[in-house]
Length: 469
Image (cartoon, rainbow, N blue to C red):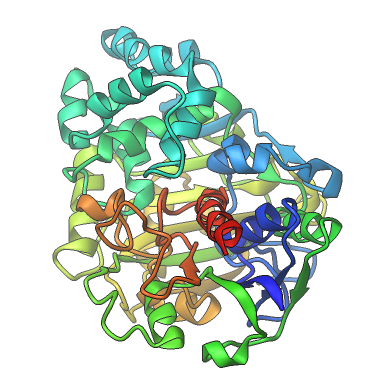
């Protein structure tokens, strides 16, 4: 009998398996698709030689993850590559605000009236970032805080809505940059704890950047799988699990799946019926004949580029997708240009690029024209560079990754209390009605992103049980 079986070979499932295997437990992972990866994959979606990331591509939380940093992933092929700037937010006038590794450079890009405000906001936390990141990403009670005072101060700044925090800024440049950071979790700007979202992304950039993985996000998953095998674990792909009886006998079962799928497989009935899924995404992967022709020079050297004219446009787009049930006319776009940092991702002189906007959950329309009209506002002539495109709306995203219910790439609405307390209001979110069954997906704290911390935290709950039995 195995000690633990993990269902799902995404970053969280693989991290949970590695954490258990490195502590001497026998572990096997079962994945429905033919390869590991989950939200960290790389495929030739458009043309030969163009390597795209179907979901996550830039990894500010990955390089800062306490779980990843504790594992020898570099020995297993993972190499982080950095663009000159982690992120840029261009404006219609051809200028841009930037999120730089340097707090000073970032502050200066926001203008003289907000430079000091930004410094005062981030510098106290940046000095203690590693401890804060560990405490924040280990919540709830999987570990006692190492620095409870700093964590409490962060909570005072982060728990209010981001619209409150943005009142500290006097000019629109700073408000727009910060609103874009918050919008990465696809939540309305006025939601509970959205200030914390923006702060975490900003601090992550200043601490270690927003890199891409050399060769593509698949390198993250492959490194975790290789690490697991070194510790004696095994991975079985092409193995779809429909019932618990489909799995070999084990002392514990850990699911890197949506709560909906877990309830169906384990027979938990309506246990997760109150779990809410958020807006979907509409994503386009591009093969380009050259770099994106951004008007703002800063955007040409940034790994990630946020697209919206101002914070009001961001707020309008988020409300349309999350509350009004319609696709926005001017979507807020998150774009990533991996080949700026990693030229191996495309043939010489060519580039890969992707953009996504928010749409209602399960939306079946086509946002391509709206996305490209937005891109043309900030990069005139963009369409002339397009060699091929691969589009994926909510149905395609859900078909590609079963955890993305209705196209929700956050694996559950990151709004209200569910931003922090997911998938249920509980101090033990990784536990389920069955004492030997656990959940470790992005539907659990600390939530979405390629960081493995949901798997790391769930593994703690599992090995405590295994030691008791």
